Length: 182
Image 1 (spheres, helix red, strand yellow):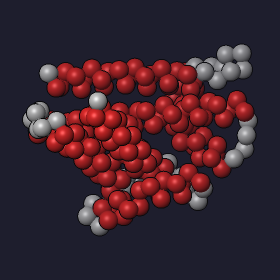
Image 2 (tube, rainbow, N blue to C red; image 1 turned 90 degrees about the vertical axis):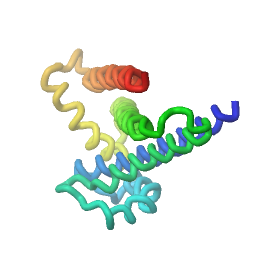
Image 3 (cartoon, rainbow, N blue to C red; image 1 turned 45 degrees about the vertical axis):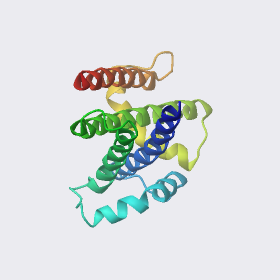
Image 4 (spheres, rainbow, N blue to C red; image 1 turned 60 degrees about the vertical axis):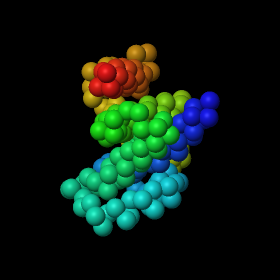
C-alpha cells in the first residue's frame, strides 16, 4: 500500500511538471503569448528547470529543446525513484523506454484536457484570456478534422472526433508499452 501511495504522488508531481514543460514547448511552437494567466503559471512551474537547461541544450529553430529535455528528465527521475523503491528488480535499461512512453502519455492526456476545456468554454461563450489561449492551442488539432467533418445541425463535432482519436492513441501506447516490457 505504501508503494502505491508513493507511486501515485510521484506520478501526480512528475505529470504536472512534465505537462507544464510540454505546454511551454507547445505554446512556444504555436507562438502563444505568455503574458496571460496560463503563460505565467507555466513559467512559474518550469523556469527553475528549463532556464538552466537552456545553457546546455540549444534550441532547434522554433523548438525549445530544453523544455523537451526537462520533461523527459522528470519522467526518467520518476521511474528511477520507483525502480529504487522496488529494489531494482527490472533492468535499468528499461527506464528510458518507460520515460519515453510516459512522456507521450502525458502529452496525449494534456491534449485531451485542453480539448475538453475548449469544448466546455465553447458552450459557455465566455471571452477570457484563458479561453483565447486554449482556442489557439486547440486550433491546429481541430483544423484538419473540420476540413473533413461538416457542422452537424450547427454543432462542431471536431473536438469529439479528436478526443476519440487521442483516446485510441492512448490505448495503442498502453499496449505498445506493455509489449516492450514483455
